[in-house]
Length: 184
Image 1 (cartoon, helix red, strand yellow):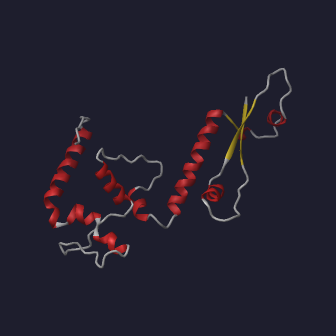
Image 2: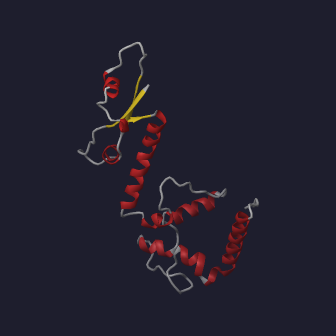
Image 3: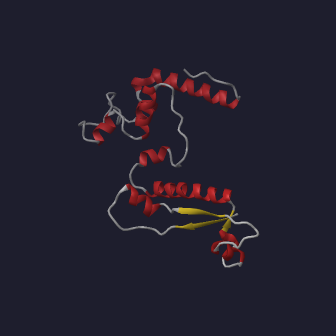
């Protein structure tokens, strides 16, 4: 068995669509399986490999070929994510693609979590940025009502912040001591 991995031609013309985007920005590769018996004459591709017309670095095992084929789209996606000019707030929180985000059991909390990651909350700062509100100031009057302000600095949320920080401290301690923690 011989496996060859070769890139397809890059198609860069045409209108923008998801399909054209995939064709332009992700290197597509095909994996060919060439099977023949020792007593039969090998196909042309296999003969070229055996005659040394194809270098040894171009000959891959099936597992290596699958690893490479899996890694190429991930690297391409990461490169595009690094170069993209939009979504920078989310990029600051999640700079690496293919990282699993753990969502809470409560759907409401999960939706709020996603909104924070996407920089699309119902807070005044996001409303002002999108043109829905006239001001981005918090009702406490100290600064813009952003996620960071509400969770970490707003004087109106002192009690909730203390509970949150105590819970985070418990989680951190349980992780360090390898104990199971029941988060409800």
